[in-house]
Amino acid sequence: MMKSLFLFSAHPAPPLLPSPSLRRLLCLRASSSSASTSSRPRPGRRSPGPARPRQPQPSSLYARPSLLTMERDRAARRADVDAFLVSLGVDPGELAGLELPVTVDVMRERVEFLRSLGLGPDDLAAYPLALGCSVRKNMVPVLDYLGKIGVRRDELPHLLRRYPQVLHASIVVDLAPVVKYLQGMDVKPGDVPRVLERYPELLGFKLEGTMSTSVAYLVGIGVARRQIGGVITRFPEVLGMRVGKIIKPFVEHLQGIGLQRLAVARMIEKKPYVLGFGLEERVKPNIEALLEFGVRKEALPSIVIQYPDVLGVELRDKLVEQQSLFESSILVSGDDFGRVVERMPQAISLGRAAVLKHVNFLTGCGFLLSQVSKMVVGCPQLLALNMDIMKMNFEYFKNEMERDLEELVEFPAFFTYGLESTIRYRHEIVAKKGFTCSLAWLLNCSDAKFDERMKYDTIGVEEMEDDNSFDRDRFEEQVQDEDDDDMEEDSDYDDTD
Image 1 (tube, helix red, strand yellow):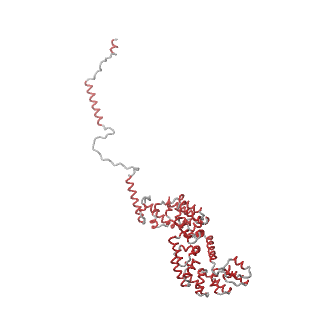
Image 2 (cartoon, helix red, strand yellow):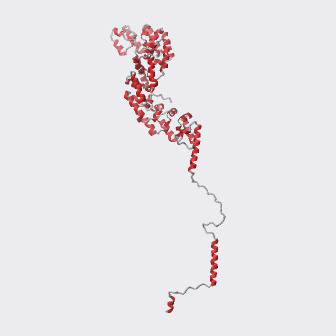
Image 3 (cartoon, rainbow, N blue to C red):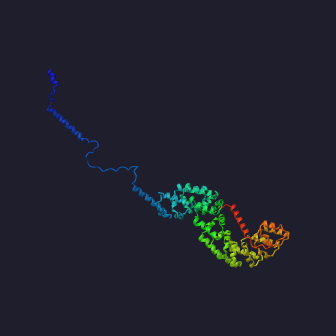
């Protein structure tokens, strides 16, 4: 019992300590172990020693240059492109701020393409912005569209020189709407490309702008709506004219000299290019010149209607030249020269050779120069007639009609009538009836009037007193009919590919 209590006592005996010899052995072994551990280098730490030079690290394939380096490279490439442009005669300063090809090779390709279109160095220098157009994104699509609608390849240089901005245009936004507008104005499909070739600036117009207002004004003064297509085809520049500054002042000035507004409208339908005659530069000075050379004010409307081109030519110099010619070769006085211009304003454009040729023919027929002068004043058209027709008429007059030459002096318009269609037919009928009449009574009437006269057996005295003057209205109608036939038979533009 006492032994058990001793074993579980709360105060156990201290442990026994090792002997001195054992303690010395343990200390010796611990010191050797510590020395071996400290002699091995620890992982992750450098052993003490001299510092070695740092080896350069290889550059990465994905390393990016700095922004400064990129800017320097871009500036160097742009300098090369600018130097290339200078060699072409193009001022690089005009292209400042414009995105250009980054290399000379790409710019050279662009220049060569423009040259293949017919644009030379002068054209590029005049409009350097064309060099800012991409060949594939801008030029090729535009040129393909123009080719599809019928613009001719040999007309492209002219079109691009007149309106190089087309290379920047959008087909959907800019070009196609203009083409549809022209077609809507009754311009024939085959004439649409001709209109654009003649006036390519149309491709830059907005439909709601000048084009619409000019057409509306023309219709308002009396130009027939169905004639608008022909007006645009023959003179597309009208679509670019401002009504208030150009068209309206022109129309009002012609009304001021005596033309009716509807007459002006008919003139525009036939010859719309008259709208392009500068009012201050040409029209007004030419009207004044006519009055100075003996034309009467009341005759101005007739002159303009007969020969609208008189408003646009260098008139004063022509009048001086023609008056000198008529005075020297035909003995026409200054006052009579005014009558000649009134009756045939085209006389101001007759060449000297043509005038002398007809005068020589008439004198060769036996007329005195004074008689020729009277004939020309009475019927200036003698100087413009076909010579073969004049010869046939004169031969028939001399051989078949048995009349005196003086009758031709009194009625020189005889030469303006057709031999087979009028002269021979009427002469034979009158001869069968045994009538004796003047040439004016025989010819200076319509076919219906002549047939009515032939119903009677005698000729009234009052009818024999008819005016022997030339029937200018008949002649003008013949000329106008011929012009209308030419307009209907021929296209407004001839395709000469």
